[in-house]
Length: 97
Image (cartoon, rainbow, N blue to C red; front, side):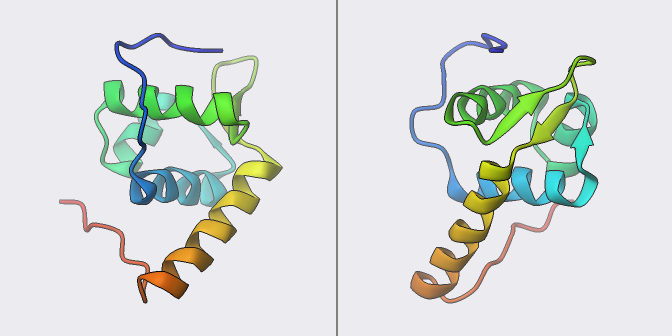
């Protein structure tokens, strides 16, 4: 299910992906508006990320349109955090104001 919100994401920001997945891991599922607010993303930018993530199999949408993290999405988050810790040294999500 794609939302077709302008240009697709071609090179996603790994920290944005991690923030979206982390939020979904904590909440299980969320509607897009609440997820945008929780991650500090504009709704339009979030929808582009969700389109990309759905194409990769990281998220799916339930019958009411809520975003649900898949098992692959949760595993990807764990791998991403491990990679960031190994190569960057720490995981630091931008503090949202």
